Structures are given as structure tokens and as C-alpha cells.
Image (cartoon, rainbow, N blue to C red; front, side):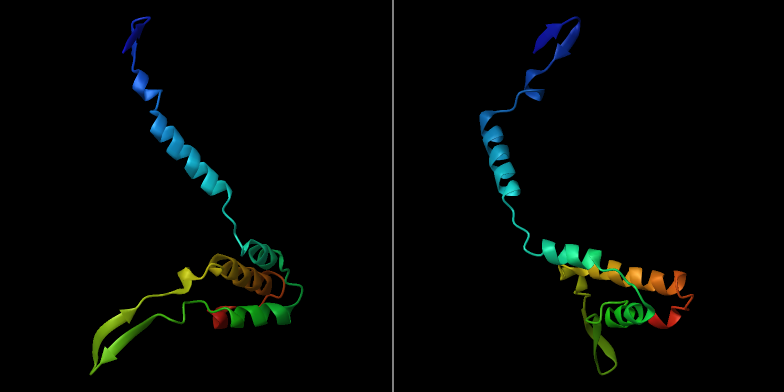
Length: 119
């Protein structure tokens, strides 16, 4: 502990041991070399423009509003199990939901269509 100008400074708060520096440095190296193979596909999905009503309707019908895999398993009228929604495991889930949202917005804003049938 140092005492300067009536203030106490604890050096361990500013100086970390060598082992922690080496581990932090190796973590940074691994984080920098991470390769995302799906990034071009994500960018392509984000750049898709919706120029007409037919494409917007097709996208809104193609991409479901809710996860189609979520189910309750019933046996003799009783709930035995539950299959959780697995769509969040899809690495392109966010991009697909955003594409569907843009299609629905196009239908409402540009075409003036009621989108309750797509929900």
C-alpha cells in the first residue's frame, strides 16, 4: 500500500499477476482468429430487398410466425412431456425473423394490406 497526498493506493488493483496477463492474452488471440462461416449468408439475408407484393407474401407465408417444432406430448389426455421451441438453435434465426418482419412491414406500409392472416 502506498500513501500519496493523503490517499491510499492499493497496487494490486492496478497490477495483475503475470499468469492472468498470459491467459487474457491467449483468450484475445483465440477470439481474433474465430471464423464465422455463415457471415456471408447472414449478410445476404440482410440485404434482400422486397420490391413487390408477391415476394412479400411468399416470404411471410414461408417463414412461420412461431416455432413449428414446439409440441406438448399427450398420452391418454394427460400432458406427458413438452418439446421446447428449437428455432433459437438455428444460427440464422434472427436474420430470418427480421426478413419476415420487413416483408410484413412492406405489405402494411406499401400495399396497405391487412396482415392478420399471416400471424
